Structures are given as structure tokens and as C-alpha cells.
Image (cartoon, rainbow, N blue to C red; front, side, top):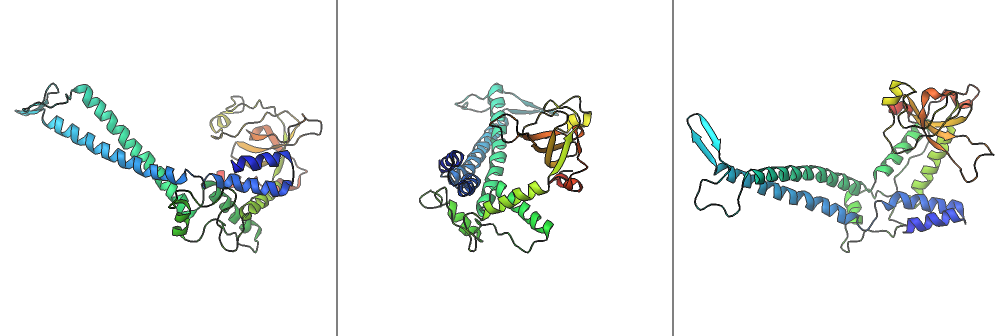
Length: 309
């Protein structure tokens, strides 16, 4: 709720710079500092334990039931699923249908144990580092930016307290409510609440500087997997929820990152464009555009292109 409130204020007006910083910080951190984060982690422990217990029961049930139905002959072993060869007979009948259902339930139990167990390890890694996957990506980009420009600065992640135990105590408290109020959180010494957001703004500015200008030479309908742009373009379509953009010959685009056969960028809009539309960005085939030879940034590759090749 605090994130939605700040976002609404940002869209409505006011001190836009301060609200933008607060909004970005809230959105980045809200996924981790939620009241249910500790409960979800606890459930990711209890669910695999319950499934392991159920799997043990299923295995022992099938073992005992099948063992009581075995009959040994001369060079033969038979299993009679109609009835158990013991007295008294079992209270619960165990036929072929029950065996199939038990085997199916065993598969579900083992699958849940593996899937939810992996989720538990991922959750614990995030908690002990006090760093979400998005924040890890921002930190990696910060180090790349400093190394690329040979800057005399060191980026310190503000929410990692420097100790796994301190990070653990921020989420798992006696009250069950993690530390932080949704807008402010404990930070490392030497940092402030907006250290991460300031780094993001630097990365955005650097992204605009290193963008490459392209001119559209072939129309593109915006299809997810276009058939008329080549076989390789069709089969290498980016597996992402990010949109594709429609292109018309003669338009200009600023590409910021890309793959071998696809690029991602912002369309350069005219002043007479549709009112209320500020940006049009998305993926488009590389063979539909060409670099502008008069652009200053033509010698620089789109950000992330080398990593994605």
C-alpha cells in the first residue's frame, strides 16, 4: 500500500524528483520486506517435510502390500493383487487401482519436495544476503559501470548489514513482522535510504548515453514470431514478457540492448504524435533497421549485447 500511495502521488504531481526516488526505492524493496515473507519461507520448509513424510508412508505401504502378495515358484515370481496372502486380511483393500493411485501420489510428493525445496534455498539465499534478484542485477550493473568508465568509486549495497545473522534477524523476528515500515529500512553504515536509487538513476543516464540510433528500413508488424523476417529471427524470438513494437520505414529508434537477431529500444517520437503517449519501447528484428552513419554513438554496441551473444 505505501508503494501504491507514493506512485499515485508521483503521477499526480508535487515534488517529482523526491517522489520518484521514494517510489523507485519502495518498489524495489517491497517484494522482500513484506509481512508474509517470513511465513512464505517457513511454509517452504514445512511443505517439503510433509511431502517427505507422505512419501515415506507411500513407499512403506507399497512395500508391505506387494510383499504380502508375492508368490515364488520354480524360476517364477508372481504378484497377486486380488488379496493379501496373510491372515487376517488387511482392513483397507489394496488393489491395482489403489497401487496406481499410491504411485501417482508418491510422484507428486517427490516433485513437490524438489520444487519447494529449491524455493526454500533461494529464499534463504535472498534473506541471508538481504538482496533480491533484481537488486543483485543492479549491483552487478553498478560494478560494470564503474569498471567500464574506470571511476574512482566503490558501490556499497545499502541493505546488506555485513552479517548474515543481522540480515536473518531483519526478516525473522519474535513478533513475526519484519523490520521496516515499507518506506524506510535499516541500512549499512555509510549509506542512506536512496543509495540504491541514485545508482539506478546513474545507470539510466549511462544507458541513454550508450544507446545507438537506428533507422527503420523495413516494416515490421509487431508479431511475436514473424515468419517473413527469416528462419533464425523466427526461432530466436526473445522469451520475455516485454512487448514487440510496430515499425514503419523511415522511423528512428534508440537501441539500448540486444540479441544476435533482435534489438530492444525506444522509438523516437515526433512532436505531432498521439497525445498522452510518452514512450514506445520493445523488441524488434535486427534486420529491419540499420545504424545511422551520422550518429556519434555508432561505434558503441548496445548495452548487454556482448553478454547475450
